Amino acid sequence: NTEYETILVSRDGRVGVITLNRPKALNALNEQTMNDVVAAATELDRDPDIGAIILTGSEKAFAAGADIKEMATKSAAEMYRVDFFSPWDAFARLRTPKIAAVSGYALGGGCELAMMCDLIIAADTAKFGQPEINLGVIPGMGGTQRLIRAIGKSKAMDMILTARQMDAEEAERSGLVARVVPADQLLDTANDVARTIAGLSKPVAQHAVEAVNAAYETTLQQGVQYERRVFHGLFSTADQKEGMTAFSEKRKANFTHE
Ligand code: CAA
Image (cartoon, rainbow, N blue to C red; front, top):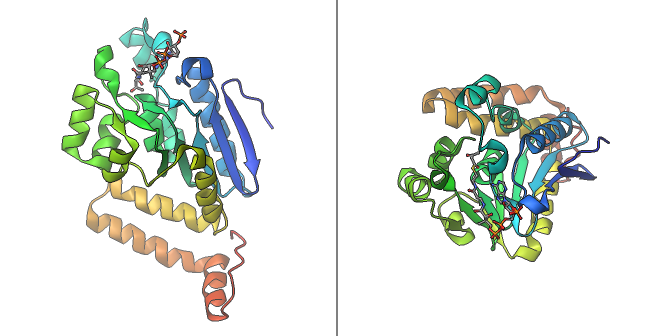
């Protein structure tokens, strides 16, 4: 039960919840926050008793971006030397399903962090944007790559070149978010989704995450081949035997995550 400076971590059954907690800075992502989130999420990912992770912020802001005040005076040489933002790659690669529950601002690195999760559930108050161009930079936590895959080139260019914010309704219509719910139902909905996922087989869900993400990295043929190999391999798991036996016996499967 590590204490973190910039986040709160809680567990509810098989669901782990990470809450960004720098209210005075609208959850701006400084280096400490990055290190806290990566450490907490990695610990939850490795825990066999956790089957899904929710990442959320406050009502007003999921996260208003990377911490501008912390970055402002850095040199290119320093950015390069420490490979600024690279620790986030470890978060993006975690295989336990990660749900971003977004209320209020998800701007810059906040939008990019939400996109590193496996799916986004948005409150009707959510606002997504990549305003980096207003600061004389471009997105730096994957925005130019992940946004185009989520919403296509024209809308991604619109957001990245003009800094226009997208509301929750447009974000859902564009495929950036999976569901939009009234703000006061955000956490309940995210919890329901997380509990559903966490009630299934963890290793199978992890393989599903890896297979879907392979679509980002490979040709269609390689991706289909990868999917098929994973599908075949899952027949070595106890959970596949249990899932299919339970269907035949007309009962609920009791997965052991093995
Ligand atoms: N970095 C550091 N501090 C931030 C911040 C950020 N990204 N966003 C907000 N804050 C701070 C503000 O400076 C302010 O602090 P003070 O009270 O000490 O002045 C506090 O949070 C509250 O913010 P505001 O007073 O501005 O609140 P508002 O309701 O008037 O406006 C907002 C809200 C429109 C989100 C506005 O805060 C804003 O535009 N924030 C910056 C958004 C942004 O540009 N994000 C991109 C960052 S760069 C990036 O993310 C790079 C990347 O690709 C990873």
